[in-house]
Length: 160
Image (cartoon, rainbow, N blue to C red; front, side):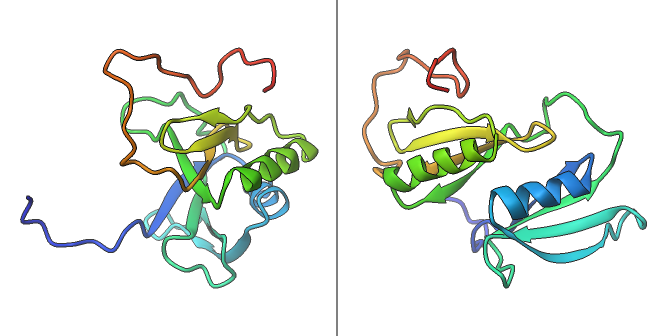
């Protein structure tokens, strides 16, 4: 056991976008989140820094922020995030989200069984991969032996 001091959990995530208007529309109109703060990057004055939250108050643990750098589109690699996941209550809610995303013309995967939970995948306007995942059965579930098949988020599934 580590002797590191305790943390309280994930506080927020900060990403980079190339078009803040498109990012605002994605979070507000597609995800139904709230823009809770508009400011600038304190380390790079003049660069927009927006805060989006699933709660109107912008509680820690519910907030994703973005810096806007219009010419920054790159290739994900070491040091970059692969994707991030938001939770939903159950598979029924997950399927409702899938329908909602399709209605907003968002390319979304079929529901994937991830052993520990079920999930769907889609991307934001800059190609950042999002996952919506159910709560259960949870990470303590037994899994198949090493060497079992790995399922990629966007395979050639015709239901996607």
